[in-house]
View (tube, rainbow, N blue to C red):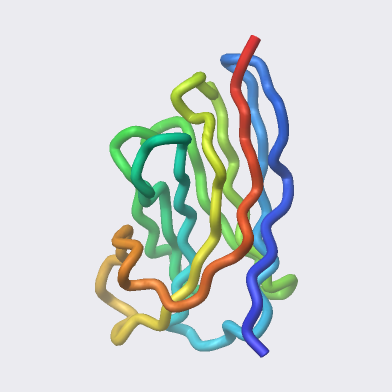
Length: 128
């Protein structure tokens, strides 16, 4: 059974760090992609980052490049999103999601409509 469960959200001051985790059971194909999305109150969903199960194929939104790092531990079936230098604009509910890519070589996508499985979300609040 495929399931995604996020954890690690919370309240942090501007400039601080958080690490989100996504426990991804049932996604064991080499071309499976896990992505992180976020949605702030009154705003649309934004793709943040994604990673393929095999290799080092990653992708980042311009708004988080240089501050966020995605990684995965396949032995633990877990994907992490390390968030540094957090800003108030990063405040949102963060979701992990999954889809199966057709190729090992193509970039993973940050389009929400490409994803077929979604977690419940975890709240991240950046405020002093």
